[in-house]
Image (cartoon, rainbow over all chains, first blue to last red; front, side, top):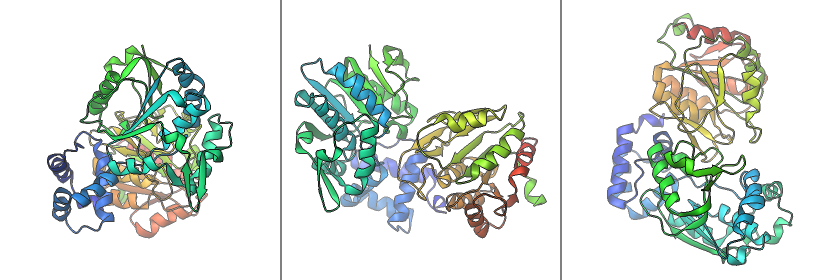
Amino acid sequence: MISDVIDNEQIETLLSDVLEAHGYDFLEYSHASIKRRILRLYSLDNFVSFAEFRYTVKTDKQYFKRFLEEITVNVTEMFRDPGFYKVLRNDVLPALGTYPFIRIWVAGCSTGEEAYSVAILLKELNLLHKSLIYATDINPSVLEKAKKGIFPLSYIKSYSENYVQSGGLKDFSSYYSANYSLAKFDETLNSKMIFSTHNLVSDHSFNEFQLILCRNVLIYFDKDLQHKVFQLFDNSLEQLGYLALGSKESLDFWPKAKQYKRVKTEKIWRKL
Amino acid sequence: MAETLIREKCSALIIGGSAGSLDALLEIFPALSNQINFPIILVTHRKPGNDSLLTDLLQKRTGLRVREAEEKEKILPGTVYIAPADYHLLVERNETFSLDYSEKVNYSRPSIDVTFQSAAEVFKDGLVCILLSGSNADGVEGLKAANNLGGLLVVQNPDTAVMPYMPQQALNSLKNSVVLNAFEMADFINKLAKR
């Protein structure tokens, strides 16, 4: 069993190295989760000892890129949780439509599927021309993929089903052109996106938004770090702006949650 | 078998199941004692959506509190926690839950292996794992991890399971598992509470 190979203390050592050598702080990530990711990578890449693994992660810049990509979870999909997107479409985005200019932050955007989903909604509501979506992630290589807007064609069927369930009425295939096994999304969608690296653990607020989406990112953080990130979002959200979290995440235990009001039954809160 | 039953007290029970496991759960739950003094964590493969269906179904059949496990929630005795659909459920060192939306394991999310493995590291020889009916091999690696750390393994009798594949896979590699029929399990679990 591989969990015998690296113990908890060694995990801490490795993560301290990563902070010191590369400036990425994973020490406040949920331990069981990050440990599982590290053990998975260790066995995937056939390391023979923890010492060798530690040395490689610490000194090999090229390998660290891989470490960063594999240690963070980059599983995402378009229109995930259709009920959530229905509320975005029918309630949240129309409320933002009254603003002359709409700024949206997709924090922890990974390969961009959520940013493209939001852009499609904005387009259908005729708001895309006056919107800007800031899509950020800790990991530069997923942002490169997100910028391209090219997703495997094999996933499109389920994305298309999600889209229909979320209240989409158009032909989903009108948003992409298929080529061999890939689907490239319409460039009018990403013409309104700005991609940039941003680390929720260590970077500051960089703008004020009317909507922040950060879904299935906070589950990887421990409670204290979650509260720090909520504060960062609070600093980055205009009054009456919206914060959208993943379906199993909640603002409830954060001390300032009283200054927010839940929108319907989805995990969306409005800043009062 | 008698020997394996004499052990330290149970600090947590995890039940894993896939296709056909609902039949076993419906047999187990009505007969569970209200005196159970450890958490019961339930990991079953199911489709996303209708999150409260299984919770409601089981709550109607037991006096224990049944709820869906929430991330960072403290794991309490006498409570039944159900792994939410479409997330892996992990146990943290401070006996709280973490959720994880990473790749499926054994084509499954939640994966039984993931919960067994992380819980084994926390509860060690206080862990009891039950593996029920199913038609893939999820759970077997997790049972091995629990076994290595002193956990007690129980496997549903493949002859009486709706889908024998999963329990049979476990028995093929873990000879020291206790084999029980579904109707014997509640009694077994109730006895764990008296230790």
